[in-house]
Amino acid sequence: MKRDDLLHADFGGNKARKFYHFLHHDYSHVTQIVASGSAQANSLYSLSVLAKQQGWKFDYYVSHISEFLLQHPQGNYAAAIQNGANIIDVRHLTDAKNLEGMHLDDAMQHIVSSDPSYADKKQLLFIPEGGRCEYAETGIAQLASEIIQWAQDQQKKQLKIFLPSGTGTTAAYLNKQIIQQQAKLLLMDVIAIEVLTCSTVGGDEYLRQQFSQLVDEVYFPNIINDGHKYHFGKLSRRCFDMWNTVCQSGIEFELLYDPVGFLVLQHYLNSNTVSATDILYIHQGGVLGNKTMLPRYQRKFLHTV
Image (cartoon, rainbow, N blue to C red):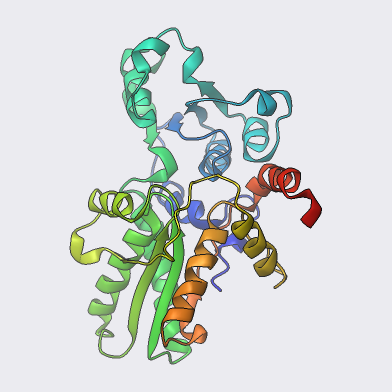
């Protein structure tokens, strides 16, 4: 297990990797972050921490905020607000009708281009939904270096790295960096390293489309599945049971991506002659979101809690 959830108390998991670039490059000209996503996204919280650390204003656009969350702020949403995030529901904007049917990132760009309060674009830092941008590669390159060094130290002959994917940003850049760094170090014939992932949003073809916007096809990681359709955020008894099982290890996992990941990984292990000791699972962090997801599961499957 790669414990990326322990990188930092307030800035861990894959979002710490994706936003590493902004902490280690000169962005003294920036005064404000403008981003988009869901009201309980891990990226919302991580970006709010980044903005607070850097002293930046932070506008975050969402497609909707539930009445329950508005009345009972909690999880990533509440923590981001405490960090000073300005969370904006696009349905309540005066231009809302013109934004209908737009992808959230496109709606954000439309708003920024037409709102006079965003006049000085040089001071703005735009972050697409989920941190899916070229800046993410900087931190993920560091992750690849750490894994390669660990594999060398452990004298691994082969290693399969597994992580579940949303936008696929981490998996795509990680596989690219693993291939490039191994080639540079002349390790390709010494350690066989393969990145495996599974889709938690939209299916395998959607994930390949996401990869294609980030890297060349030669760097696509291997997508595996267990034959089941998973609907992002939809409560599933199979997912909840798996989450309870893996959390018995003493490590807390998050409830959106990890249960799907472990179900697919279990199927993979049962279907292939590969040793579990040759698989490195990357903990993605994001457990703050459990504060809202776990009560939803408990309400639905109360008799199992």
